[in-house]
Image (tube, rainbow, N blue to C red; front, side):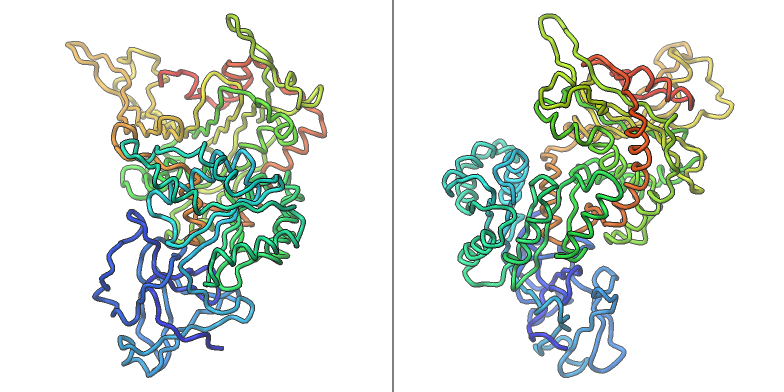
Length: 610
């Protein structure tokens, strides 16, 4: 079946069927703002109509391959065919034959019965479900304003807050305005931009399980959209127990009838394999997989996104990225504060579910994956899944759990975990965990991946530490001014705070003698780059609107991640393993150091000077 005939525009959303072919958003750093036509693509074929992008990247033009028949060509974008859910290649019908490819003749696209007509739209409605919550106030609204400030949102957009709280539009704007800042460019007075953004923010009060309330929201959205075709992005900033009700009501009563509808889902994605699978099955009753954007905000952090760039675009690293040269890899997450009122939520999940199973495991998968076929989202996620499926089962003797106790420093007493009134009395929920993972493949066989995460520790940091093997027959082994065991090269990628990448090398101390010490070759982002490092939510919201899935979690990825940790979590809970106590503000349980030493490893973060 052939859909409506209309001119093609430069960029396509390859994740929906029929393919949405539209120009890039007006984004200075994301797309060219020039209105002049490309010499390769006549202006008659590419009319400025709307905003979206392919999952393979931003602001790129489709490549046309010469047709094998006189009336059809296969449309490919970044070398990847547009396909529908049955994996059939989208065909572009060219009226008048191949000789008219560059003429004003209209080009029409095939239509899929299930998806409806081709959505060629330039506007978007962004609905934040749970708009009165902390995440929405502190992260989502500020991220949207930052995107607006940098002209990264569609020309026509509306932000709607949806929650059970009673609130007017002006009250929402007042609430949101308190969280906005001009941090993008502190030299600018962005009050005018703020007022413009707030003027596009509206509010609708309703229950999360009420189709009627979502229908009323739909009517308000249509008034704002002015009857034009419009995409809709729902952000579920709500507890997981009401995900399904909200998705059901949103999709049945407030989906876009003339554009795409996408849903961003916040973690936690279940508590174990079974609950995660049940959540996925329930979501797929109302959504296709390519409409679901499972967000892990750590994947949007600058240094995590740079991880594959560092490895695959620098010749010095890729040859060393294997068991032949790497002794161990450490993935470290630490916070210097406790649950601070979130104990009720945290007590239901614990540090393993909250941090290890998602944030740290996702970083591990990106770090350890093989070179993907391309930068296409599916190629990257395929390689990540292979890594996750290659991880050996975790044994309990390779795990340390801890729970912080109260600590008095001077006149200040820091409460212990169970002192939090929202935490169950006698709770065994770990606030600290360390474990060792092994990847059963040719590249990483035998290399320990040490993972550590904890709250109420002595510092706040997230980093990846790659410790290399000893230099065989090192001529200068006896010339080090410090412990020779610390002379191994180490690559440190600090995700937060103070984003940086540094390589520890051995160097001669200036002087007449032959003393060696370690020095850092340091790339500190704040010193090297003048522009602000964007917040992770900015990148992920922009990617979701553009249909870029590279930094979002696919359902089989989620299954593989839970398969690693579910048996361990079950064993810890069935055996009522008591976590080891550690003082608030310390380096964590001493057993974590013993665990590392069992594999001849020293935790790299224990020396704060490194």
